[in-house]
Image (cartoon, rainbow, N blue to C red; front, top):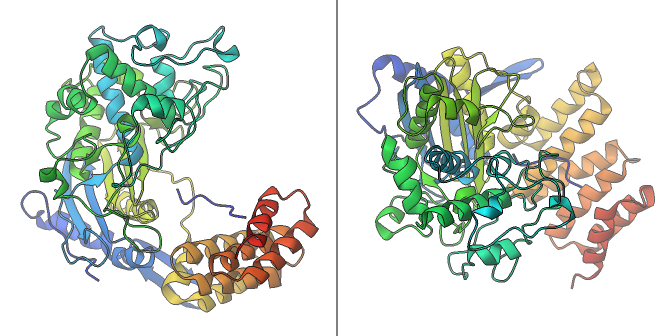
Length: 506
């Protein structure tokens, strides 16, 4: 069973959005991209990995980066290519799907309507919804779904996120998405807990926000966001249009799966525009973050007033404000991650210091690379930033130096006591899945087999080994391992489901 979340050719080619960066920034870029991670290797010399190396290891064709210092973009650059097998370099004008970073941009548009008196943060949204209304039930008797709750993921609504639609598939209407009716590919969006009592991420709720904005203005969502946000700060390369018109579509990157294969049709379509439909650049996102930070400081009001931005960046219950997330461990910082099919992105900004960055990748492993790049940026520019997790060093050793080197390193760390037996089991499990879904099935099998050898009493290692055998069509071995997992843990529901699936394989 998986115990992790996959939250970051010509790799060095890059083009700046404006003139070439000054010499001082060029030196910064060379240091940042030259070594994004240094991994201790015991008695051996440390493994120093460049951006190009980690991009190759993670099957990330392209990355676009914009770095902010003192409330200004000090450099913007593209790395790699627009897609698998392509020699066309990423430019800073190359369009990427922003995924869930669509949400804070859309939230800014909604707050413009609040300041204009067309919407209220704390009234029942059913009062203004016209096209469709949230079904009332036992959970909405005393507490109602409000715009504040939609934007802060406290509305008690279902549907975490959206897979999008193949370019050749029929596109549902928003009402069909709300009701889970074909051709929608997600469940109905409903209230299943009392609004205001739980923090639970809901792209479904933000899609209701999209309908609410359209209903009160009578305008299509892409045009509304261009009017309320994009045009006001010169986000000229950005659009919520789904699909993009041909002129814009000609400048997009190509979505890429973890195994390095391209998304069919280059990308998926997202009628859930407010939640996942923004096409943009790292430069445009950086300019948006700067505007929000300067508004919070009372130095700009191109989109929103200082008072409204202060409310936007104030957590409603825990970390989620109105569109953005904040972090108690990093005062002043606000941001959001994003993931669409074959695309991932990361945006962070500190309104107190004027430091931040936007990173966009055309890969399902984009955030893994963006996180390492962000660490290197933070180090180079002296950010006071605490990262939640340690980088996946042993997994990167496996991808860059080979599986046996990584397994030997795990054994060495266990011997010295630097890695507990349980930590070693978890690390090997994560390593196996990374290799498996990265297109290295046999290497993944080798790691899972080693985990079974080292931890024969763990039900989870057998469950995990069953998966690559399923993937590679080795039915008998898959059944054998799922059965062993269930012997050790009869309550393993994932094992039960997979065993049934394995037995039905032809």
